Amino acid sequence: MSFSSNRYKQRKRLYSASWSSAIKLMSVPLSKDLKARLKIKSIPVRANDTVKIVSGGFKGRSGKVARTDVKRRLVYVEGITGKAQKGKTKLVGIHVSNLLLTRLDLSDKYRKLILQRKGVSPDLLEKEPEIGEVEAPAAGETQTESVKSEATSSGEAAEQTEAVGGQPTEEKKEPEGGS
Image (cartoon, rainbow, N blue to C red; front, side, top):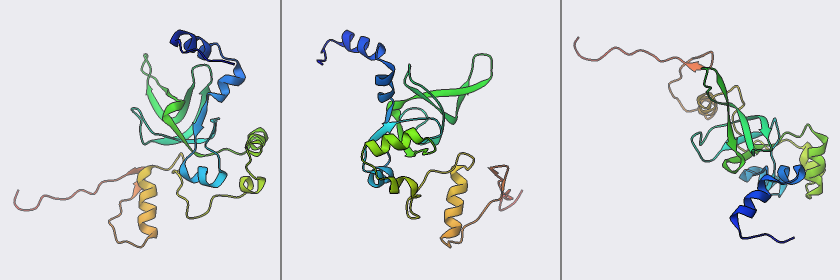
């Protein structure tokens, strides 16, 4: 199979690709931890995977994949929302080229078969990540809560604020000096 250097033909080939080819185009690179553990570079993203956005307007944020759009090559991540025209909030699609996989959902037996076909041993799939590995915060946990828990676990004496409903409360300080 030969590829054309003509950009119009390349674009036509991209948008008229078969479904199986389109799913391969949904491949996302794995994080350093996963890459070292599984010895593979990328895998197609699926719902319930955890991803980190590495470029674009939402850079640095991470979350669980709510759904994927294979035709448009977009991934919808929980917590990444925008305003719709009628004022409602809706999920914003992130292109697969802007993502990094941080945690795989291995509840699907076909996903496990794909990984085994790529050479990953079944023992690695059953084993949970080691304690030393850094993982992204859970979908319900905010970045500040994970930092607080790390600070308290390391034994550092730092001022802690109570979190009510996931939002930290701010302590009011009176101004020093006169009136």
